[in-house]
Length: 136
Image (cartoon, rainbow, N blue to C red; front, side):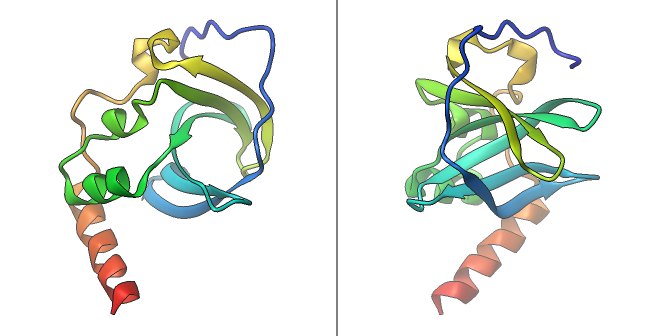
């Protein structure tokens, strides 16, 4: 890993989460929504990697925050800003390997998106149009 992580020795169990929508993708997905078996929506941000393991920050994403993220009125970091987030190591195929639950204040600063950084404009427009088509 490239970031200096101070993770607790005790890992956390997480529910199985599957990628719902890829919001930003370069070579691999970078920002995604995830859903668990109870259809709880999560925001996932890839923040570090080593070999075949990608480290994600994941937090519950309420519908109002998702809409604000798409509208460009809420930054990615602010959308992650829950009292607690999960740090999850996943294979590149998405299988969870390890997970820890941490307070946002316990995360390394360089693991978090820059304050106020929005989803790219083209991404927001594409997702807004897609959402409107699903509603019509």
